[in-house]
Amino acid sequence: MTTSLWPDGQPRPDAAALAAALDPADADLAPGLALALEEHERLAASDAAAVAALLAAAPGPHAVVPRLPEDVHDLAGLAALAERLRGAV
Image: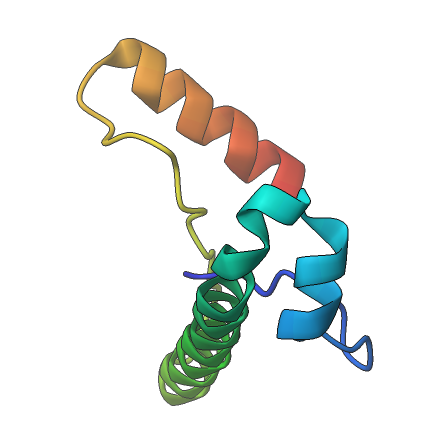
């Protein structure tokens, strides 16, 4: 599930704020970065709504498996997943 980068109620920086925070040589990247951040937040909201609908439709206990930076394909990956799940409980 894609997680939000900002807590509810906190405004995301717009292109002007991002341009001011960037090195002047990189300020032209601000509009694209602002758009990417907006799209990320839209995806996070969509994911949250889909997960909420799934959880509401299925009775019983649930666990949301966190997104990991890599696929789980060995014991080390399984251990990393177990650690993240322990932290989520």
